[in-house]
Length: 144
Image (tube, rainbow, N blue to C red):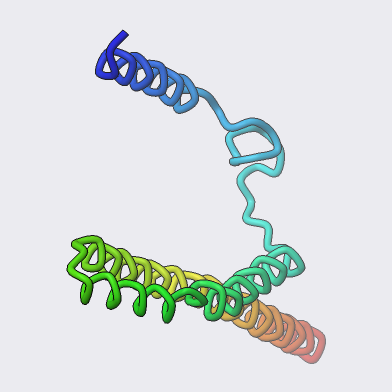
């Protein structure tokens, strides 16, 4: 069997598998397709806080771990280029692309962490305002 025939067979199998998974409901307790809470949004501050914390940890690790080979890679690319190897330019391009991808991932992690922290803070403020409004409403009802 040639490579092209083998590749076509693998693609056909993968496409059929994906199509089959896309045509099914999400398993319980997953993606919300089943019965249960009736579609109510549930905000679990502990879970959201944990996700935000993990996004922050990932961001912190990416700052160092995502770039730990940058200097050595740039030096190697320069050395290869000076010696006339075309792979020097390719290595430099790979490093530039890697750095771009790390920056994109850092921004995404920061965005997730900040958005979840903001959501928790906004939810707490909304809850506090709701309690204050209900308390004032109850006082007004009792005083009139």
